[in-house]
Structure formats: C-alpha cells, structure tokens
Length: 356
Image (tube, rainbow, N blue to C red; front, side, top):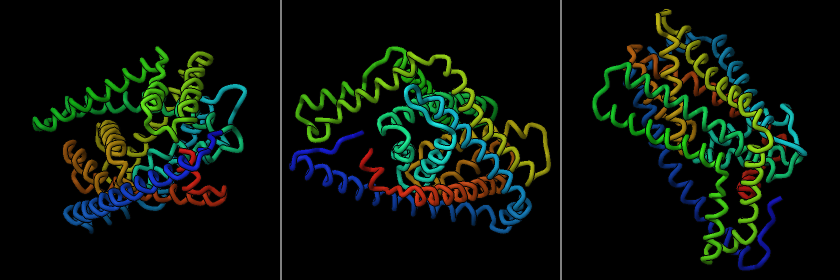
C-alpha cells in the first residue's frame, strides 16, 4: 500500500499543492464545459431541433436498449483484458473487474481530466481483493494494451479518411501530423516494454536527488519503481497472454463500430458502405474523446466531430449530431450505473485522489 508522508513539513505541503491544482482544474474544467455547452447548443440549433428529434424518435427505445447491451459487452471486454493483466500470486475475477471498469468510466466521463484518475478509481474499487500497487500496475498494464490497439485503430481510421475522401489541405496536414504522433507513441510504448526502461522511476530519482518534491518522492520513488517492476514482470512471465488481451481490446473497438453501424441503420435507409462510415465515425469519436477528455461527456466537441465526418462521407450534418446525442445518452446511463456502484462500495473522490 502507498504510505502517507510522515514528517509535519511533508504533511503540510502536499494538501496545499493538491488544493491549488484542484482549484485550477475546476476553473479550467468549468470554463471548457461552458464552452462545450455553447457548442452543443449551436450544433443542435444550426442542424435543426425538429430533424434531430425526429431521428431520435425513429431510433426508439428498443434501439437504445440494444446499444446499452452492446456497451455492456464492451465493458466485459475491458474487464476481461484487465483480469488477464493480473498475475500470481494475485488474481481478479470478472465480477471484480467489470464493476470497477464501470466506476472508472463514470469517473472518466464526469470529472474534468477524469481520464487521469479513472485508472486509480478502478484500482481503489478492487482494493479489498489485491494490494493497491498491484491494482494500479495491472490497470496500467491493461492500459498499455488498450493504448496500443487504440493507436492502431486511430491510424487505420485516419489513413482511410484522409486517403478516401477529398479534404482541404490544412485538414489533411493536421491528420497526417496526428498519424505521425500516434505512430511515435506506439513505437515508444513498444520500446518501453521490450527494453524495460525504468523511465518514470529514473525521473523520480533524478528529481529527488535535486531536492525537488522530496516530501512526495521520499517514499513515492520506490513505489514507482515497484509499479514499473510489476508491469515488466508481466511482460517476462506471461507473453502468451499478449494475443488474448490484444484480441479483447480489439473486440472493444470493433463493438464500438457495430454500435455506430446499428444506430445508422435505424435512422437512415440502408446503403452500401455503411460499415465503413461507422468505422470512420467511431475512430474520429475515439480521437475526440482522447483529445478533449477535459470536457465532461465531451459535450459539444463530440457533436462537432461527428457532424464533420458525417458531412464528409455524405450522410449529412443531422445524422452526425443525432448519432453523437444518442451515444451521449448511453454514456449518461452507464455513468449513472457507475455512480450507484461508487455509493454502494463506499468510494470517495478524496480516497481516489489520495491514492493517485
């Protein structure tokens, strides 16, 4: 477990830093959320409220129930990948990981920069099953596989989009730059694992020797080293799990494409190439979620991205905005489930921040 700082000086410094950062984060998150709401209102108004409402009515409650079920299967895929990322002498079952994934996704959706604490929330949610550092390292291991498959998914989507459709030069250049950055991340992650670089712990050690953040790093740098060793230990001891984990993470993304495809088939007449359109819409949505995670529920920017892709592929702006709104309803539903689980398990944001 991560121990608390012992000296009075350390105990006084850490909360002040935390409070200062939290305040800044709240201000930035509030401002961006407000901008997102304005953007959301603009796209709904400019696209046409009646047309969007008509599309949602056509989709119906049965359709909404189906995408809730599809997302439930996606959650199970993430839970299974996490389960496979824990190794002896510890273990987690799906009944442990699936609720924790729901909790993490709820945190990630609701809170500005929630993506930074969603992994910790998962580890805290299973703290009675495995030690916290084991939970954190297994979440990080699963996130590495998720990052790898997501990067491949985004690269394929971006290449298909920029090469298959006529885009203006600035957009093409921007997408090409993003492709290059994502490819660089994939290569870095691969080298990090294969070469077993203790990058994070070396940085912590260097800062500690220079006298920076000594209150936090006095014990923290050892915890980071242990954290890295647990991840690299998985790489050495269980290489045969790599393919199953990659397959479950890939299934997560493919089910996202299926979800979009199902929505499209419910609100417009079936046409050739609809699955390709679904693939492009899902890949762009995933990219927007990553870039704009500071905005809760990526409100506004998700609609903007969906409209841009839908217009480019010839579906029309109303279809893109409708798709984004329907999927936002799905996010709200599962966030509600996550909140119920948080209350049931007695978790608190303070405990999660402390673990972070």
